[in-house]
Length: 211
Picture 1 (tube, rainbow, N blue to C red):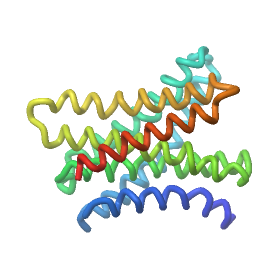
Picture 2 (picture 1 turned 60 degrees about the horizontal axis):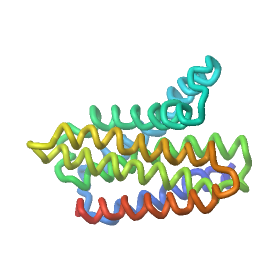
Picture 3 (picture 1 turned 90 degrees about the vertical axis):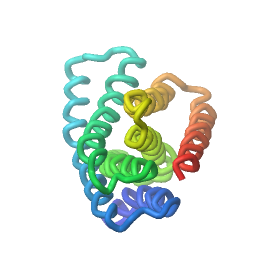
């Protein structure tokens, strides 16, 4: 059990520390960070129920609709919804980078619990691949979501545009990630590697801009 918990939470904590230490996040924001992590962790359960219902009812049948609507939209929309209404208007959200750290926090809470169930079902031997790809990709989707929410928070002229980008850009990237998993066969490893390099490059650029 200790090995399972370590494999589940270790990658998330490492990624969280990386983004947390990238900026001087206030101590007042720490409680909100913990809350958003817990919210993300609890969010896994209703999302799993919804996705299971979609699968049983055969709502989405093609790889494209499963990737973008069954997985990406369902997961990213609920993360965005709770982030927007729970953290966006909070007093501790007082600079653009706060959006990134809250976005990463809620995403890693979600990824940790999702990873826990996956490792129970498939074994610890898949833990390193989960850390490199699904867990880190969730964190990076959170970076992008939080960055644009941060831009929206402190922008008057293009606020609505940034809010929309904070929702639809993570959905687009998440859907593309899942579509690669569902459709690629022979070249899946190199395609996924290139996708993750691009995702990391784009996300780190947003971190630098926010700082």
